[in-house]
Amino acid sequence: CALLRKLIQDQKTRWFFCGMVILAANAGGSWSPIGDVTTIMLWIKGNITAGKIILETFLPALISLLVPVAAISLSMKGNVERPKQNDEATVSSISRKQSKIILCMGVGLLLFVPVFKTITHLPPYLGILLGLGILWVTTEIMHKNKPEMYSRLNVTSIIQRVDTPSVLFFLGILMAVSCLNEAGHLKLLSESLDKLGNVYVINLIIGFLSSVIDNVPLVAAAMGMYPIEAVGHFAVDGAFWEGLAYCAGTGGSLLIIGSAAGVAVMGMEKIDFIWYLKKITLWALLGYLAGAGMFYLMSAFVFHT
Image (cartoon, rainbow, N blue to C red):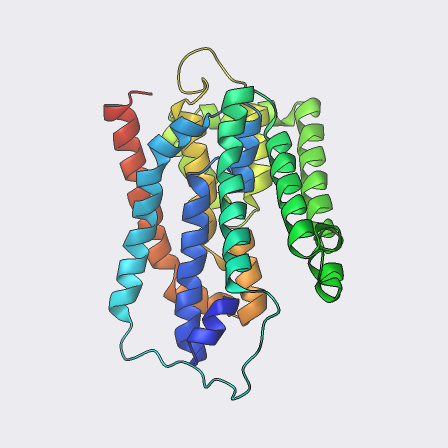
């Protein structure tokens, strides 16, 4: 949304585009093993594999995005006006070539992580650390003769600006869920949900809950409630785990407070909770249900999971 401020002048118009950014961020994260915290959790614990999660949830995630974006686009009228640019051009000390190198290398190394895990069978965090090391060496070489930039752009200074409170927040959540699991509360909850008799309905409910409660504890709780089985819906790459990745990821778009992307945009653009509820939630709900329907059809009749 920081980029949208440079492209769209009118605030209300920009809010619509920010709403679509939230939808895109959550939908995009739900089908990739490294796209969202929840899918990373499922992938690291061995509930899903990289190839299957992409194959079985990409189309549902795409539909969950296209339906609301198409509806919102049709409801918008008029032209988008760009804000006036300052006369004084900002001169960047980083060349275009260097920016492209870092961008392509960063994206490529992220995409390399699933390949690294598949080939080496090592934990994914080692692939991330390997990518960080390669980026580190590259930036050191790139800025070694520029002392005025080195202190600001080297990896050491960037690591110092990591959002540590958020990391500790997720650590606290996972520890709390582990305590509930050890106390047996998650088992009682799973027995209650099992009475519904349908894993697709259970996932839909988890998706709705993720719009109010952070999806990380919900997915962590689901992983604690249901152990991985040899066959069936709860096997590796089973319908439950694939559906959980989709529903927990895209369900957070129903309310602006339901995902990290929504909370971040809410803080940056000061979007009203009620405005999002009136203008975006209905379309997000239609997209969520449409994608869930597509996932059910693919799971039941195409992949037979």
